[in-house]
Length: 249
Ligand code: IPE
Ligand code: IPE
Ligand code: MG
Image (cartoon, rainbow, N blue to C red):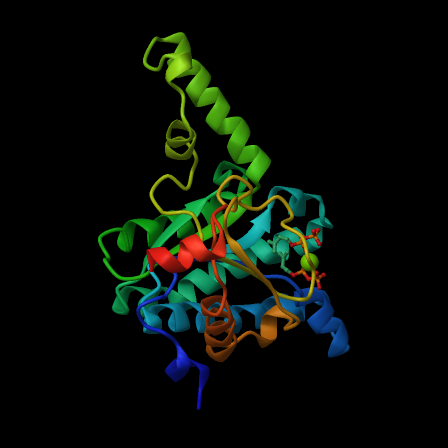
């Protein structure tokens, strides 16, 4: 039986975030350039989006390029940006047909103008869609996001729009770039690396983590379903005891 049929449809996470890692190692395994790995990563993105839509996930955040990734060799950065434009162009018809809404988080002003134009085009065209929201984390890092949030909140405090003593966790969440969605119940990282790499640090406070061996280009819908099936076996306690959690069910 496929993992899809085994899923408890009453316990599908609303928000799943994925750190798409391992393209370079996948290419190395196939004795090819890193570029080849990134190109093959696009297929996996399509699989993740289709799989998420099939089981009714509401938000899928994909970590595509971090603030620190700007420090990679210029050829690789340029190639990744070109690939982004190509992928948006080749996938846009399907995205629009499938009622998928595209959004981004991150410092997209750092992107090259061509990349930004094609990105903004698909964001605009898909903005009224009501199905799965795919959030692409691009030129994103959690520390960058927190710094931006502090600047905005500090400005509001200065202008007496917010009183410092009234700042709560909700104030912070509402001023982060992820304000439009719930925190991810599940964060998946491929390629067996066990770290966050500056991803959603505030939002991950109570996320479940799945560090899986699969290299990103090999990720399929079935990988997603299997990982969610594993997530569904876990008991999320939020600081309470196991007994309290069971009693509340
Ligand atoms: C993930 O794969 C893609 C990006 C970070 C842009 P990597 O390029 O990090 O692949 P590895 O980690 O070198 O295998
Ligand atoms: C994290 O992957 C960022 C993305 C997947 C976009 P990296 O491959 O850049 O992370 P580190 O440097 O190994 O932590
Ligand atoms: Mg990597």
